[in-house]
View 1 (cartoon, rainbow, N blue to C red):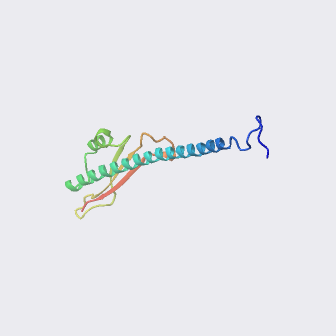
View 2 (tube, rainbow, N blue to C red):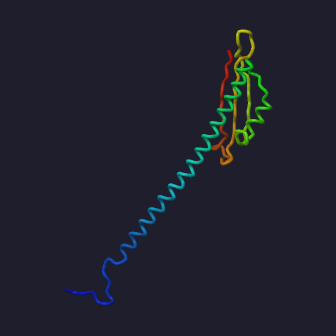
View 3 (spheres, rainbow, N blue to C red):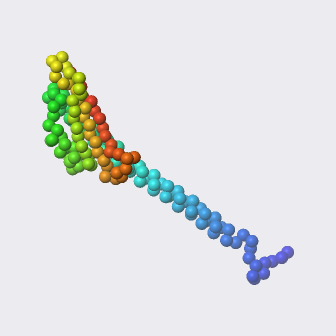
Length: 142
């Protein structure tokens, strides 16, 4: 039986080191993927929160219309409220309330309006693919 001499190495030396390096490489790609998914989920969460706030604001405007039994509201005050980020507003928001043409009640008064709240999240780019988000709500009074 031959014994390895002082200058001869075993044939598989260093193979475990390569296995460890490859496994570290695979693990690091997994961590990078998880970090990317986390960043994407945060963006989606912020968009969902903005949509929820827009729906709540549109609901408040619609409730005001129902309470007054009129589609005319003070849009200046609501514009300020929609833009006020410290009071539940939206970033770069605009509000328009327009009467729906041809929609009248039995007395001939306009009884339907479209509430449009548009906003652009601070994190979005200004390309056409990332256009401003908007929520449209139609209110019809009896």
